[in-house]
Amino acid sequence: MQIDETDHALLSLLADNARTPVATLARKLGLARTTVQARLDRLEHSGVIAGYTLRLSESLRAPLRATALVSIEPRSAPAVLSRLKSLPSVRTVHTTSGRFDLIVGLEADTTEALDDTLDRIGETRGVKSSESLIHLSTKLDRRN
Image (cartoon, rainbow, N blue to C red; front, top):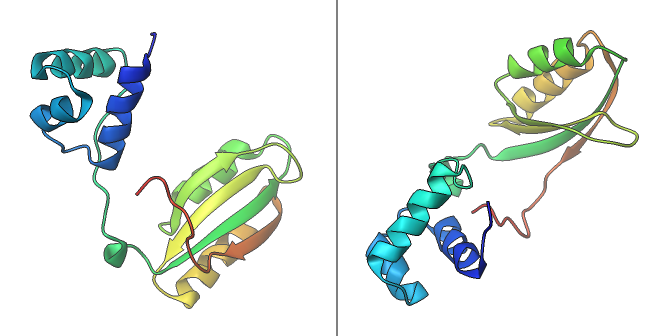
């Protein structure tokens, strides 16, 4: 699907606040409300907009965040991923190229819970090694 400059502007406004009324979006874009609604419908039906979601206040998110860089044994990805999915502190898992195979995003309420999760990752069958990085502060987060 072809996305033009107006679609990009509309998506940017929705990224700031997906609950913005169509009339407000139309006013900000200088378009008719029906035109904006038609664009939204087209973007939704084509899959460009996959859905709308809830963003929690920073005060409700777990106070500790970390990234675990994980190297795994060949052909062990399905088992390792299954184990990671079972750990509540694991929020995201990305495959990557380079020295590490997986980038694991973690959130925990306490250092003990974070330490326990890191231990469980390290003891998972198929994990060769891991390195953890504790997030100290967020300087830029375009998702919020």
